[in-house]
Image (cartoon, rainbow, N blue to C red; front, top):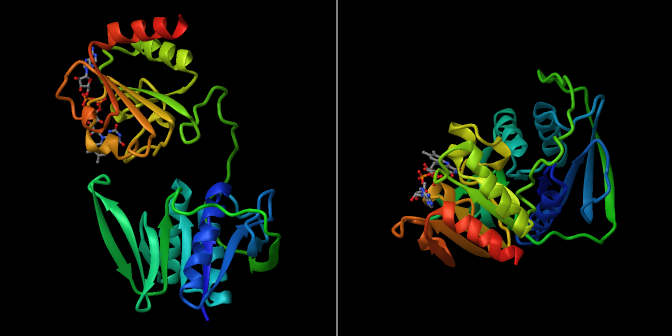
Length: 306
Ligand SMILES: Cc1cc2nc3c(=O)[nH]c(=O)nc-3n(C[C@H](O)[C@H](O)[C@H](O)COP(=O)(O)OP(=O)(O)OC[C@H]3O[C@@H](n4cnc5c(N)ncnc54)[C@H](O)[C@@H]3O)c2cc1C
């Protein structure tokens, strides 16, 4: 009998994957085990939890974590490992795939066993189409947040596994706290995102004023963070940035190219402000304001303050 392992350094995602692993195990005569590294932490998944211990801390070092997961897969005879599709999760999966000779299904949801193979669905062309992908076992599936309902409450059945002294070329130099006021777009309920419709960096004060009036967080399209450097990378929303799902998303001076829309399409309500009524953003917007942002934003801020 095989064991479906699940792992993410993101605690919330780890709880979701633990649920995904048990669902998959239940339909394939396998058992499920949620992997955590170093120690149990505050929020452990329910069910069977495998705590991997090494001679030095594993957390934060993707080479060590990949090595530890390879050791766990061997010890537990596991042929399926679900890994959270975070930045670190992608690095771990790539490394583990080479170490353990496992295939990788990237960004898959709706996982199921199909004739001894693992099958899943992934969005392609920035989420416009769905592709069904499949691979032989053993394999790794990188699973994004939001695919499974996290499960907490059940007391975990904990097992420790010593993985020895693993090699890693990563050297930890320092840990810096996130700067004060850093944005966390993943959890923001309201986001105002600025695009190239803003003529200069100083004009972002207008977007900030709307953020303040709505009580939200500031995001941006890629050019503002990656090309122009007006905002830091943590503001970058879209296919190559952060996927967001706020209650309200206000796109200001953003054209709505599919790479941007891929990251916002799960927002509950999308409002677009753009002076070009043909801009593609209006195709995904629930509400649209066709107008010059330099006039629309001050009017909105004044209306919200009234
Ligand atoms: C591989 C790849 C990955 C990418 N990943 C991402 C990604 O993750 N996220 C992302 O955002 N982009 C990404 N891009 C870039 C993407 O294709 C677009 O180029 C980008 O999203 C455009 O940003 P924008 O909408 O701010 O700018 P533009 O496309 O230049 O649009 C500016 C908009 O502002 C409007 N406007 C101008 N002046 C005003 C005004 N005064 N008032 C109101 N409206 C005004 C214009 O009508 C226009 O619609 C990626 C591209 C590639 C090739």
